[in-house]
Image (cartoon, rainbow, N blue to C red; front, side):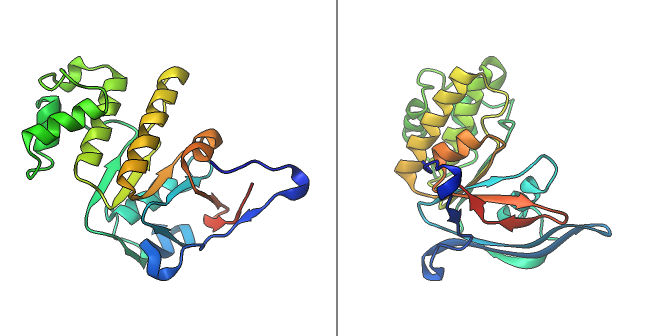
Length: 223
């Protein structure tokens, strides 16, 4: 957790504290445009294995666009991204396969995953005895747990999360935060996640980056 400070002793979190040789992810987005409109400029940062970086900023500024570029889903930008091979993503919506069981949602995505390992992964997130349930029969919280199980079952080197706790009630959000915190500590991926909630950033992140301006760029974050 990032400690809070009073106004008189606020610290500036540097944008590039990760030594180049230790970085699992290196991002250099010189420019990103949608048509004639430049939405991102000079978004440069790196993330080490085992480090969790939170990306903050107002709605519509380009946080999810950064994630899509980092994940390789949007190649139309000026710059380059270095990423590891094993990538997992957790979205705002669970994006599960509705016509497949919870167990199949893991084994179809990870063909090398044994059924025993898949069952263990489901039990790890509190879905023991729900292996044969279809997503539509699961609560939203259970669907989010299934999405986490699927992400971590592949032992990712890089984890990307786009507001995974949005629309959850406070009690469920706290449970999901605690579970995610534990899974990240166990797997130690290089993690980038977007959130609007400063409390979530404080809880999970070892470093906070903030997008500001038009076009958006990264600013050192005052804490």
